[in-house]
Amino acid sequence: MKLFIDTADIDEIRTIARWGVLDGVTTNPSLFAKTSGMTYDEVLTEICKITSGPVSAEVVAEDVEGMLREGRHFAKLADNIYVKVPMSETGLEALARFRAEGIKTNCTLIFSANQGLLAAKAGANLLSPFVGRLDDINQDGMIVIRELVSIVEIHELESEVLAASIRHPLHVTQAALAGAHIATVPFKVFQQMVHHPLTEAGIAQFRRDWEKARAALEQAAAERAVAGAAGSRAGS
Ligand code: G3P
Image (cartoon, rainbow, N blue to C red):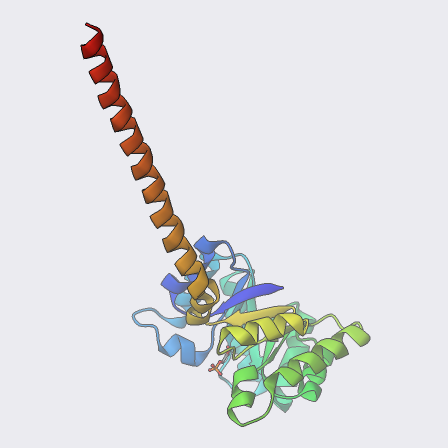
């Protein structure tokens, strides 16, 4: 399973890349709005220098020509840009046109298996069902992941299912078990995945025991040195 980071924050992306677990990046207008000082193009170009994996850049136009204009522009920034297109009638048309042009795409804001099926048929490379936002309205978001993974497998579709709107570590585990090809994970959730109270307690215990063992060895060496000195004084 591939892990993407769901952020436009360059420092967060660099950190996850240093961990050796970064397979790609997803951004959207809301995530870009949290950054400051750089244009969206600059942010995307910088991200594409950090990873050679897919980097999603989202269009904001709602008409086909506008989506195509924005998407073609993003696609020129780097080879690993995936144009993120929202699910809609115009979105499907744009996905089909991008496919014809050889531009890679990620269909976003998917909330049902049928929407995912349509996006796959239109040629989206990545299908992004939003798990957390479905959970927010009291629907089990993971069901859409499971259904879409099955549909992709049964019909041997070429698209990959990307679990998005991941809110906590359990979502990542469940998406992995459901067979999602990718999960896009916020930085905070990556950190939560690393930590476990028993791991932290174990590290602290090993450190204490190591210090105790080293102190005992030093004590024994010091006692041997004292005994050796006393022995050589008695023998002289
Ligand atoms: O990339 C889109 C996404 O993952 C949205 O997450 O938490 O705003 O629902 P969220």
